[in-house]
Length: 99
Image 1 (cartoon, rainbow, N blue to C red):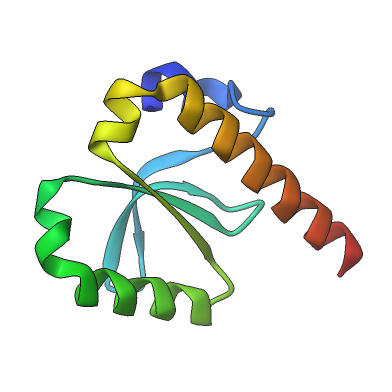
Image 2 (tube, rainbow, N blue to C red):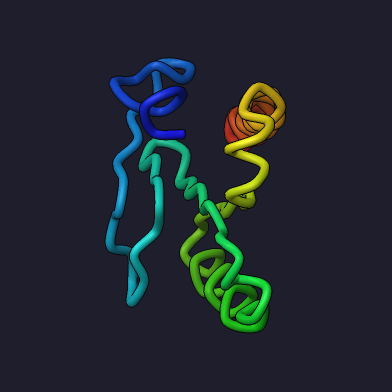
């Protein structure tokens, strides 16, 4: 995901950082311009859904949007992840223009 989509402003010209500390968490990828974090969930996340839910809520309290994909989605369908992310970011940018 980092090397194929997000690195060096390759995605929509947006700057993403990886392994960004936010509050008491470290998020996988973060875009400060959009207050957006992208999380890639491994198999262990099946067992920690409540933790992920709380984490998403707490980041949301700061106005941060969390988008989640599974490792499997990234590894097996990166073009699909790219398309989905592109749509979600477009909607996020539009909502920011309205506000």
